[in-house]
Picture: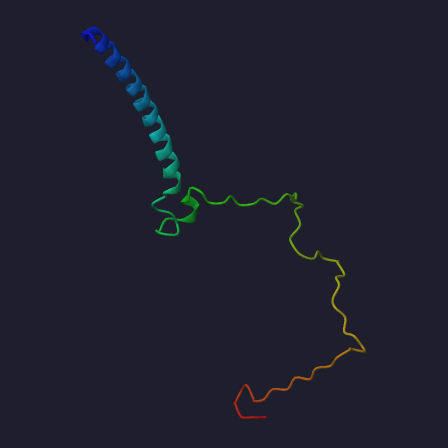
Length: 107
């Protein structure tokens, strides 16, 4: 093998290696970027920063209802419903305390 042929073979090998190094550097940067997303050194769980600064915190849900201008709860004039007492219950459980809660002696 002559010197010129050896130089051409080495140059071709050098170009291939440079392409491979370039590819591996790009891949390495991409992988470091993906890894950095999971390595958050400080968040609200392991330091004193507020939860609003956390990068991956869940967004607050917003209500889909439109505002009416009225206050929450029953409106004036609304009759309302309540659970009625049954005149003839199935079971009656009589509960009596064993001791007085004020002074403590047994009943």
